[in-house]
Length: 328
Image (cartoon, rainbow, N blue to C red):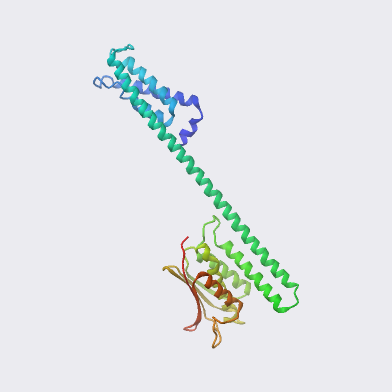
């Protein structure tokens, strides 16, 4: 295909190659003349015409067919060495003209169809590249805009004297910035969805560093990417559960173990966040808690059409989110 493209714009080269093909076919026919019985004047000419029709195009193939036909008429159809116009000769020439016309017609049509198909394939590939580029650019801009919005909320909170209002604005700004970070981490550098485990570790490590906590973090599962509709709510649930362990479970020591597992093996995906901290107080009900973090978690679980549970199991505080997974 590349070779054909190089000569497609060079008309002289195409006709020159057609004449070369005809000349080689004539020489080959002379070389086989004594080995062939009578009645095979076109044996080497048909392949030459077919090759020219495919590689050189319609007109060069016609030139090759014409030269080969004249050579066959003069040298290989009796009476030899003359352009006889007898009825048997005209039938032989007519047969040759019919066969090469059919060959050229179908092969040239096939070649044009293949060229058109190749052009369409390249166009679709370029469109796909443009789409991916636009998607990555849009994704990047959305993340940046979210980060700016979060920073503005936090900045606005610094000018408010009411402690509760300032704290609420700061928390809102922090969470918007978290969503921006999630958006950045959801895809790798090529724009492909990143496995949950890859960006979950980066986000949780960043959250632990920001809080000044010493956390032994273990991640299991999550080898597949999250669906784009579910990535943000699932990640927010994980992060809120992790922050809850840092703030309430580990207390002033700021150290402990956190185990994060995302089971994507079945139709229902299960995210589990365990920590060995102090755990919630007796009688604590996460379904009725007024904590902003837990309200966010319940809202995300509802958005996913899933269920969130929190409790103590074998000395661990366990936060578990169950939802029906989607496939990209």
